[in-house]
Every structure is written in C-alpha cells, then in structure tokens.
Image (cartoon, rainbow, N blue to C red; front, side, top):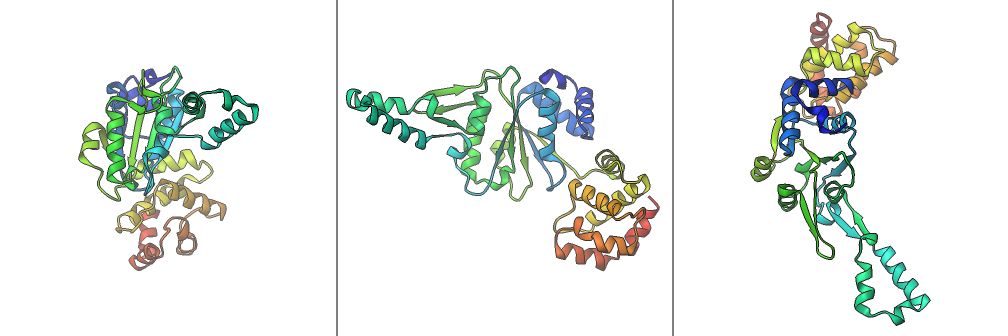
Amino acid sequence: MGRSELSSVDAVLLRLDEHQYLADRGLATSIFLAAELERPLLLEGDAGVGKTEVAKVIAAATGAELIRLQCYEGIDVSQALYEWNYTRQLLHLRTAEATGIAADAAADDLEDELFTDRFLIRRPLLQAIDHRSDVPPVLLIDEVDRADDEFEAFLLEALSDYSVTVPELGAFRAEQPPMVIITSNRTRDVHDALKRRALYHWVEHPDFEREVQIIERKAPKVPAALARQVASATGQFRDMGMYKPPGIAETLDWANALHLLAETTLTAESVDATLGTLLKYREDQERARRAGIESVIEIALGA
C-alpha cells in the first residue's frame, strides 16, 4: 500500500468510495496532484463539509499513520514540534546523584546525557518528518485558521523542505515527505505565502444527490424517501444564510433522529421537534421558523 493507491484521479475516487467518502472529481483531482507533486493540500470550506475526514480516509486508504496537529489560539512551536521530558530528565539526575554517578561524571557529560533522543518528546510535526515507516504518514494540520501569523510562518518554513532543527540534536529531514492535509474553516484568511506553498481546494457542501447518497451510506436504516426529504430540507435551510449552516454530520444526526422517532416522512411537528439536531444556534432555528417550515416540507416532499 502507500501512495500507489492514489495513482490516478479515478483511483482516488475509488479508494475514497471504498472508505465511504463520496468525493467530487475536483477534490479527487486535488488529492491526486498533492500526492504526486508531494505538496501540502489546503482544504477550505464551512465547518462540517468533511475536510478533516479527507485526511482520515486517505490514511485508511493508503495504510498510512494519521498524525493530527490540532491548531488553536496560542499554539506555539514546542506544542507542534517537540519538547523535552523534564520529569524524566529530573529523575535521571536524581538517580545519578543517588548512585554516585553524578559525583564521578563531568558536569558537561551529565548535561549532554539529558539532551538525547531518549528524553525527546516528539510532537506531531516532528513525528511526521522523522517517521520510521515504509509508508509516509498523513499529517493533518487541522483548523490552521485558529493559529496566529507567527505559527503559520513556522509551518511554512518547516513544510518548504520537510526539515526541522532541534538545536541539541541537529537537523531532522524527511527522506519520504508525509502527505500533508491542511484544513481551514476560514474564520480568518490564511497567509498568501502558505497558500502559494500548498495546492488549494474549496470544499463545498454536497449537492442534493450526493447528500442523499451520503445518508444512504452512513445511515442505511433511514428509509429512502425520508433520506431524500432530509437532504432537500437541509439544503433549503443552508440557503437561508444561517449563522452556522448544517454540515454533513448534522444531516446524518437529523436523519437518524427522525428514524428513531419512527418518522417515515417530514411533518411540521417532527421537524419542529427535532430542529435542534440540525441547527445548533437559536437564531438559526428562529430564522428557519420565520421562513416557514411548512414551505420547506412542501418542497422536500416533492424531492
């Protein structure tokens, strides 16, 4: 296994489909090119469209390890790259003192022992670059838009040649670079330099037919007619300009909730009662009700 599983656009579509991910041809093309060119792939789109799932499915399809770097406000280099295991270092010093080794050893030699590989804690970026596997890992840098500009600059430098330096140990360089998937919900613009380094794809919400297929795959107990109605109604709600448009996970939750309530078709009562599984903000629910749930259902029943 490995990147040979992604040897063409059609092969990517097939592998993703085998792992229950229904991608469009544009996304499959971007994945193929990223694998062939050994370039990071930046996926932007609304929350819930399946960006993170892309990395998970690629890892499963290629037999690669998935290494995830979750970005957040305030993340710094040490949390992404490495840090020293201070607890083990202190224990090592105390052991040396207790056994008399510290008295016999030169201070510089004892200090050098503390900064060896055995005390190094590899964080996701170093794990991905200094991997020891035959199949290069998939490095998921998730929600990069939550990090600050300085952290983006660090990522850009590290991903330019897939090498990093630990001052005490020297440089680490990937003989086979990891496949890098970067995701952004676009809460802020990612820096142009990072976009130039990466290939780019905007991940749309699925169209009606693809969302029906997703429901049928992921929620097979839901009746076919109800699946089509749910997909239609969800699409209509998204078009209302919601503060938080429902993602695929919310669609599946809603379909499963309706099925568990023994509903076989949408009704005003069932939609109103379960709207919280689809729309997670009170303002969005009020907007849906003001727009008219009955009219949404009427269109959905004809889907």
